[in-house]
Length: 367
Ligand SMILES: O=C(O)CCC(=O)C(=O)O
Image 1 (cartoon, protein in one colour):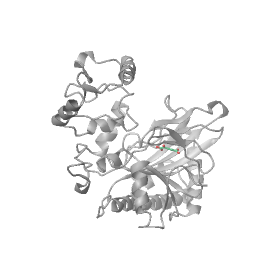
Image 2 (cartoon, protein in one colour):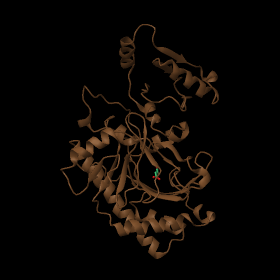
Image 3 (cartoon, helix red, strand yellow):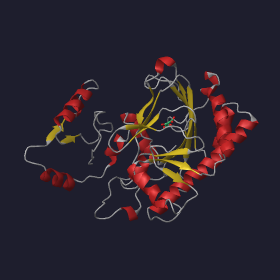
Image 4 (cartoon, rainbow, N blue to C red):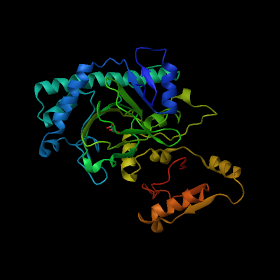
């Protein structure tokens, strides 16, 4: 059955090149069919993952962070039904080895993880290269970009049907390959109109999501898809995500994607710095990109000149009278209700601006 998101046939290139670029611009999400990852490897990996996630808590806790949030994630107040094990830099055999040792993996489990890590890592690089080529870019653009690997378990029960498994978010990196649960649905992606659409399982295929780094790297051309997981039925759901994160040095859009009609939209920043920004601001659905945009004084003045007289709200707080965490949502709600354009000034030097969670869509940031 055809799904709601575009389907890309990996054996039909360059035939599918345009469709791939359009899927990334319009949706930031697509299913791939006819990929080269063997179905037996996918199903073997799924059973390895299930047994690792069933390990006692004290063993799972050995899976320590390498970069913040890359290791074991226990059920939390925000996502009480969700837990995950993770591995940073799956392209490195030493990192894969350390992950397996932490979890007392058997020789067979190690071999499966190793083979899967290699196959999915190669696939992530291949998809990224095909996308870049489709956008008219040449060269080995993603070489050395680290990959993170995360295996997710959702402890769904009858009582939790209808509750969120994972809250709305975008992925922070460039692209994610997701082996979603082949039997249990629940994943939903947001389309351009802001509606969530269910992405039903399609066994044997893989799902690809683009993240925030794809938007920054492409100078705003590629869409970072918002998605979430909802509990639909009372059964455990398992998925395997591989994130191609970003360059080790600063993310800078290739010159081919910048011209007078498409001026540089983002200031250079590293993936690591951006990951920390998302964590410190708790902006997990792409809004943190607004804090990295490259709007100049002149652009703000030009934008202001285009607005009708007295139509723009201007807000500026002193550092010692910023809204509290409780006041913030009320302020954001009132601003949204006003439907007026807003300029919000922050005192320079504050590294964690009090930016209401509700705002962020269609937002630009000026240094
Ligand atoms: O479990 C899923 O299908 C989605 C997982 C996800 O959104 C993530 O790992 O970022």
